[in-house]
Image (tube, rainbow, N blue to C red; front, side, top):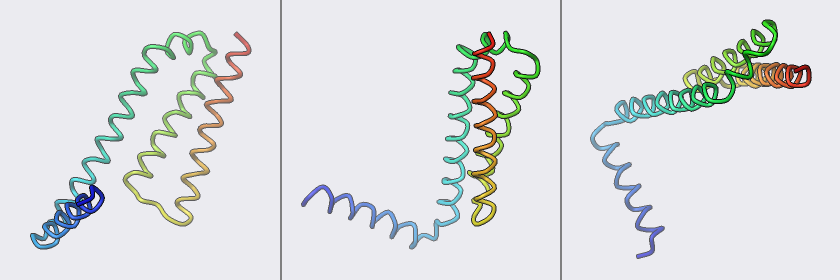
Length: 118
């Protein structure tokens, strides 16, 4: 038996067990917990990156530049959390992409401006 067919049979067996034992709610709960764990893992990695590299550089910036940069980052994090837990579609998805683009633009523009001034 080829590995593809074997893996497909395992997947079919797992799906059959989920349907027969009525475990859809448990599966949805596990999916939500995994989504939350993924979001927390991204936040921890971003924090460690900021602690090791960004904090010393951002302390040399003007107050306005640091405030705009941190506000853009917080807005982007809230936007990503809304995407992960809200499942937006249609106009809400468009709003997600517009807000994400605006916050990324503000953060990058502020970072570049502060690096050229220092």
